[in-house]
Figure 1 (tube, rainbow, N blue to C red):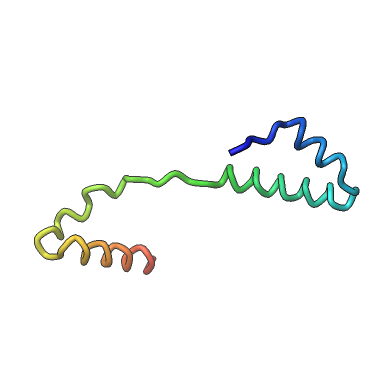
Figure 2: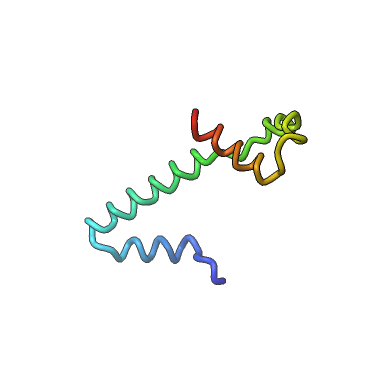
Length: 72
């Protein structure tokens, strides 16, 4: 996969009309904001379903966990 060099990107942007430059700026700001708000998956729940191990299969536990998360 070919990587885009900064200079290439700047050259492309410079060749755009002003109204499209504004769209590029808005989109770049959106992408920056989106990348900052991504959260890493937390595993702080790990092991908390162990008390249900004998009561449910792993598939049933998975479905139950989904029910519990979506009911909050």
